[in-house]
Length: 225
Image (cartoon, rainbow, N blue to C red; front, side, top):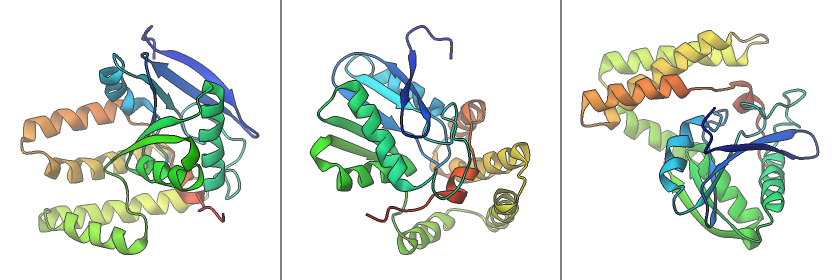
């Protein structure tokens, strides 16, 4: 966070101050992190690679990182507010149109923006976008599970049960949730790399940059527009 190449500032919305981080110069690209619940930090290495050609804008989505909300509920974490946040950043930047790069849940967010604010979208790049409905999520899970061993499937299923119990409880233990989530990520991600050494290095970096708030997906509600 002390890298002098990065600039940090806050953009005001109706109910919170969004923490925004930028690097580079050129056409504006807003990078949207995944989760929902991840902060922006793991996308910094991506932005630094693009910074010689683009003005890269990252931000902590509402309820994550330094973009604090006063309370976590269905109203403060409604999808319409996520859309309004993006619009607040675009307006602050003085840009008529913006480019979006969304990873995982961020890809879904980019798709929603394309639906609700197409007049302000110059282009969108989706990287591993999450499934947009329950049917596609089931198909994804079935395909993904084929690559796992029986022992890995059993451990991952146990992790999900324990993790969801923490998330859905009244008082969640963040450290316990973090350890479970990272371990689950380790199991699933190692199957995505041809080299165990590269997979191990990726997981190490992920663990160092990981910051997730499980209350965001717990209360996130879709748009009614």
